[in-house]
Image 1 (cartoon, rainbow, N blue to C red):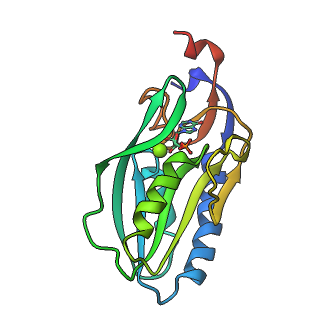
Image 2 (tube, protein in one colour; image 1 turned 135 degrees about the horizontal axis):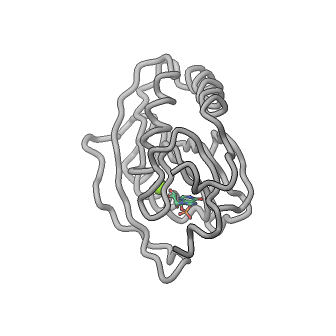
Length: 179
Ligand code: IMP
Ligand code: MG
């Protein structure tokens, strides 16, 4: 699996360092608040488990799964809910946990939906951000690392469901796409 990678973008140590920094910031910002961390399946699972261990305050976790409708390679902007939250978020301080923010289409729809549920506050933490790809009017308050417009895999991120189990993040060799 490793041999399919062109470059490593974030090592295991760098990812842990990011989780530590974001965790300290989130601990300060959410102290004594009714925090609910919402992980977006499936890509955010690894980041979520490492990040929440670094948040030193009471919190609940929940998950959502959505699918974007893609016409070819571009997202059409519509998302379908495959799995909704298991509990009410009314009056809660909700933190969405994402693996990567690209066009923003997915998170734009999710934030609009969750905001309509009378939350106390709603913010986004994303491990990676590709700002050059943005189409929707949305930003994450907490960003692990900004990266250039390149397709990345590992640590939850997949290419056709492969590579999610790599403990670090990298780019794929071009020949992998043409297999
Ligand atoms: P957006 O709606 O365009 O922001 O799409 C975000 C979603 O696309 C992420 O949650 C990922 O599932 C997927 N995605 C975007 N860029 C990459 C990448 O470089 N590698 C793997 N998945 C990606
Ligand atoms: Mg995703």
